Image (cartoon, rainbow over all chains, first blue to last red; front, side, top):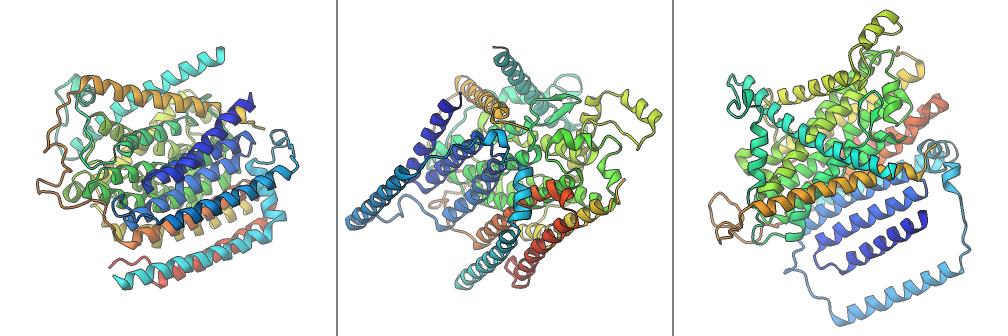
Length: 166
Length: 336
Length: 120
């Protein structure tokens, strides 16, 4: 039962991810990225990681994609105004991406598959995630707050600089 | 096979509920505003104008849905679709009466905040795709507003999760069997309730926070270019959203379908149980909807900077501190 | 305990919702007239002739609000598993969250003090 669903979801994610790159309009790319995130959220559900499922939708599809849409609208990326890339840039992009793909392929091929029965253990449930996070991983959790602090400072600085320009 | 049949029945019920809610809420909006302005409101179609919205729906259904020149055809048609689906997915975990819940999951409120965070995408898409300055301005305002107020709505939800210790909606309701949180939780819960109501009013783009579609400056905001059924879908989604947020407010603070109980006064609680749970649920929800409609005719519209100031300078810090306060209350056991 | 199969109703709701939307769009397509004129298809601008492209750049404040929203949203996400568990952790969990939130409040006061959300 789960295997065909997995294949369908995986195919959809790969298709959406490809469309992100292929789509001509930046807003379409964002839309395909949202769809891609949804299929990945579906994968989380298949692994019974309910917390990650919800967080993935809230943070990626809900928050970060809104940010992306704002940025695209801010930059005014219209089809007409987009500069054409030169041939050298294209060749370089294709070859580096191809090499990265090869490296990833090699890494995945040599990896040993670990089969974990996530549905029975309930590792991904909110309660278990919380227990782990707030006991064992307390330090990283608090340090992440510092990270957010720096991000806030950076955002404020960026906003200020632009404001003085205009 | 039985499972499939169940799905079909549940799906049809959902659509039926959807249609009826939309009709009732639009009529209610018009009637409430009419009475607040001492006029009669719709009174020609059907008894006391009860069929007015049905007639309007039929009219919208038979109208031309055109896509303006220069619009992004794909996104323009997709946006109402996304709005509607997001809203319908939110209906799934809401219990309408005791034991009458389509879907009870253990991450109930987390699911609700996840799906409701998608509403803003449809608005931004609609505004961008329309190729209209009013639409884009409305969408940007609305996007900034919805995402900002989502924060304090989320924090108010967390306040109740702290008290209940569970994300499941049925657990949250069960925890209010000996009194609703609004009575049991004292001051911190009242603060959470007030921030919640303000936040959801803003999140559903209702007056006084309706500057995304401020008629006098932006014609109709992000759906200026929409007509016919595509407009109707946005409109319907907006009203169903009001119902959903009020239902969630009723569940979190007023116990959902839970009758009015006081501690362990057996006799009193028994009498209250005679009133059907669906009446309790819809009574509370429609009371909150009425309050939100009341806001519309009480407060003047805010400006975008005032609106963002209200959230970022007042509501957000207040609700963050309030969550800590509620935690203290819960640890020390100061609630009933 | 819950399993992935519990999430089947979402799929069902999704199918029902798309069915509903497609059906209404289809019906309106059948019923509605289709007369496209040059003026009708123009973007609505209160009757004034429209000027250039509508997709113009605008205030960076919106972007700033969005970026701050992402940060605070993640903070709220962190609070969900904590809120479910804090009863078992008692005072320890409270202090943990107090530190976390106070760091956020420091950033928050910084944002307000620098006037990042002030609109000109």
